[in-house]
Image (tube, protein in one colour):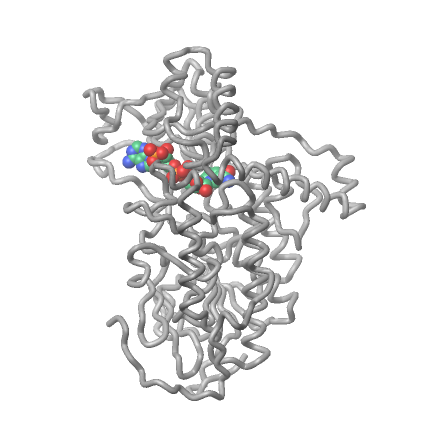
Length: 506
Ligand code: NAP
């Protein structure tokens, strides 16, 4: 820990967010011998999205063997696809195993960061605190899906029943015997609905767009297999590699709009035919966009749940929400004791979760107004010593987000270690490298399924894709193997400012 002339302590690293990414970054920093960091978490406990998404049925649709860090293998996963409790347990066990608890600053909601170019230090504002935190480097690990959003449906405020958002589940609410409406049929909804039909008197599912549903074969891990993975870690790694390359091959049909996309769609149609016998319902559930354009829905339970006697699919558009339920466009009021909104998240249009002010007063939200961009999804020119996890164009459509995250973390830890070891004032990515990189990304996105014409949270309202990475995970990971210093302006702490301060965005 260093101090500035005002005697304020300066952290080596401030990590914003205590979910998977923040914890992964903290572990790798420690392993690199960097211990002077704090993890700022606005909540009161760790786990990010897996702390927040506790709805019944919450699980990951990527196999646990792959939805975990390579540097923290877990031989004990109970199932191929483990539930949210187990995933949260894994995150907590990593925090304990790597001694991270003392680094956490809970209840610290970061409201903005600004770069002090003279000092080469980020000033970090915390809600409700007059003093600022200072840090030489910042890791922004706040996650793209942290802010649950209720949809802007007219009348939503008038509703007198109980409202629950999928990411803020109310575990005290007893669904037994209740009339329940579910709005949304995305990745969260298809996990919730099978659980609700078991409890509620009736469940009405309000679908706007049917998605592609593919089988998810979930098996229990036998005690023998767990024992093998405990005793022979190489066997666990081999299994992880098999899952990895299996998912990589799927990219050919899911990432790019190719003849193989038709094969993925055939699998989806076969699942629909097998599980739904009523032709009219089948038609209502048939997607009209290319598979992969929106997130694939991996579930074996969703279609059967929809056909239970107490469940009904409503495909009329929602006109408004009334005091007692949901009114659809043809004029029917569907009364409900509770409305479950599985309607996704507020993904900031500009992509900056907090105000970020860089060199010469430039404001990232202004630069990102037409869509976010970064160099290799991690660094943005003009915002030195700041590193994003899950930044622009880093989203996978076919593989584990944690594979991408691990590569980002390894890269940013190397960059941070360079800044600290060489005592740099700034490591600032060169604008031209960033522009070249993004021009190529946007060109490659043209032939992907995500840009093939459907509405999803991957795209801005103008159709700009600042979310997904158009390639194999292997390519994404490969480009992050080393920090090429040629890509950056490298400024030692001893170097004086050469240019006068210019305010780019006032
Ligand atoms: P989502 O994919 O954004 O789905 C939201 C659903 O709500 C969609 O069906 C959407 O319909 C509907 N909706 C939104 N606003 C509406 C409105 N005003 N009226 C009617 N319907 C409305 O949200 P999510 O299911 O919570 O998933 C978000 C992301 O979280 C996923 O893409 C995935 O990345 C992640 N996730 C992952 C897992 C996992 O297992 N790994 C599980 C859950 C979530 P439209 O389709 O017509 O827009």
